[in-house]
Image (cartoon, rainbow, N blue to C red):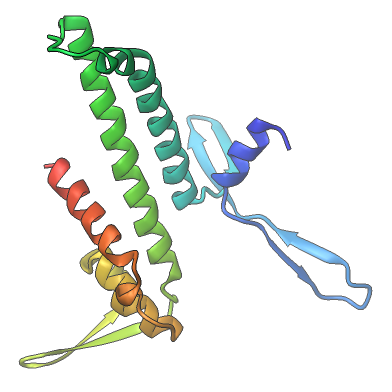
Length: 184
């Protein structure tokens, strides 16, 4: 598979394969979506939102790394104070923009993956002072935090252990705080 095909593949909703006859013939369903532009209609594979955000995060991280390697790494090898001129300041801001975009789009991809794991028919019940609040998937996606979905909703819906006790949970929590604090 060439690079172009790999890029398209990771940003496309995955195909569904199934067999329904005696000869084990495989049938494939590829989700498609159409978009109208004036008199033209484009039919494309349905995008995989998590894949798009992961792809964007990788591209932004690569741009940031390139700026760092070419512009700032040589400066940081010197000792003393270096005052950034207008051009270097511009490069510094580009580096920050690409880094922040990479982090935020990566977090958005995580959020998308978490939301996709919630079963469509799942209902969560939360006790409130004046009774119980029943939440469907859409309500949960829009109103509950990613860490709540990961630590409470997904384990309940999929009957699995909560990741809260794993050694990686503090890292996830601290990265979320970084994203929120840095994007304000």
